Length: 82
Image 1 (cartoon, one colour):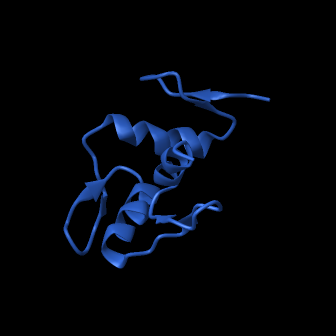
Image 2: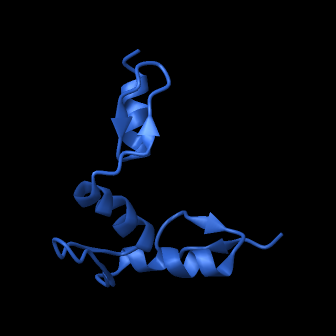
């Protein structure tokens, strides 16, 4: 299997399209703009995650206490407190 590599960091992937999308994070190009606060992002997924700040969506739920989070990282950090 061939791996495609980023020339700016150690990122590798078997998919050419993924490395093309990744390379943009190393540039000043931020094509994904929040239509609420106008903050811009290099990747579409980052904009989608950010939008939860405005929508109030909290899809990540602790299975121990029920607390919810807008980001998976928040849930992960929270679970370490149990």
